[in-house]
Image (tube, rainbow, N blue to C red):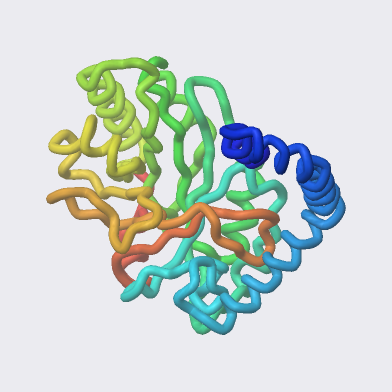
Amino acid sequence: MIMALLARQLSHSPKRKKHYRKFFPVLVLLTGLTFIFTLAFGSSLYKYANKAYSRAAQALPWLPGSANHGFGVSIPRSYTTYGIDVSHHQGKINWSEVVAMDVGGKRISFVFIKATEGITRKDNHYDRNWKKAGEAGLMRGAYHYFHPSRDAAKQARNFINNVKLQPGDLPPVLDIEVTNRKSKSEIVSGAREWCRLVEEYYGVKPLIYTSPGYFTSYLAGEFDDYLLWIAHYHSEKPRTGKHKWHFWQHTDKASVNGIRGYVDLNVYKGDSGSLQKLCIKKIKD
């Protein structure tokens, strides 16, 4: 592009054409050297810049991703209760390392674990995650990834068949974030049916997990009596309108010991004592 612009400028007069022919070999040489330099040292320069930024982030807490903020990300202010949510995407988790991690007094105290999806699917790591997270002493909850295009009753049965909740566990969660080209009325009807059957079985009202845009477009005013878990990144606070939220998934780029790669980080709008009050007291007979 640069050579094309130079050629355009130098081609307006015979004198400029003469200069263009004179300097053309130099331009070609410089372009070639730049290309070779980028191939040879581009990767090393990137790694150096990345390390320099990491060192700066440790010293300057206002930088995005500063380790001083905790878990490798900026932490929302005024919250004390932190948790994660996981699925097979996180691979095999060392739950002992998760609970042992302490970042300036901030620790992981709860986890939501993907259990099922649709009418037949079960997360490959659910059984292990559920067992090991409980043994590590974390408050745990299970969630179902809902598809509005599939039969809601069969989806509820898939969740119920695979999730055995106990007193002390968090309420079940309906993860609803896709439309599958269904109308608002169809989405609401299916979600209500899933929630009704799950509440009937466990004796506790489920949580609703979604994004601000999805909530505003499809769920606002329809699930006012349900606790809300909202996913809203790069924001000082989640956007839910008049509806109060209880859990906030504020990033998907957190770093937690015992987990390879990134993981979602959440805050609970309250202390650990009030979180325990949300837990199931007893399972319906």
